[in-house]
Length: 113
Image (cartoon, rainbow, N blue to C red; front, side, top):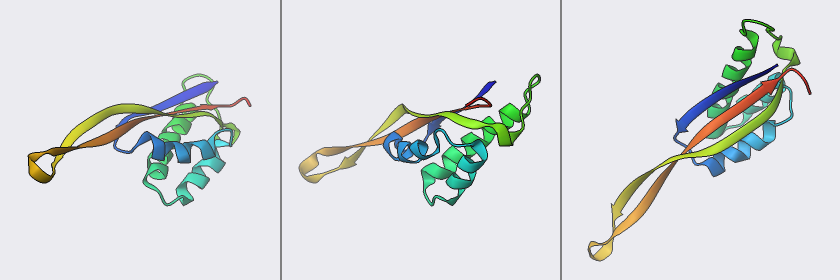
């Protein structure tokens, strides 16, 4: 059984979030949650919330509910969300572009390895 959790439009660059997401792929869900809780980065907090949601989805499934100790992180994907475009005034009346990137976090947990 596979269960999915998605968090959209998170205000962090996908590049920064992918560094943390690579660490938890293939690990047990409990070990991944413990690992992410010890990493002092904003991306780790956001991924931890999504991972906890995926675990809760698997535990509270109507049919075939699974114990959290048997779950594995099958997939932890970070996709690009919309980019907020802002401008900062620069010298001589010009403007510099600022791109505020967002991410979509997608975590899939399964009870089979």
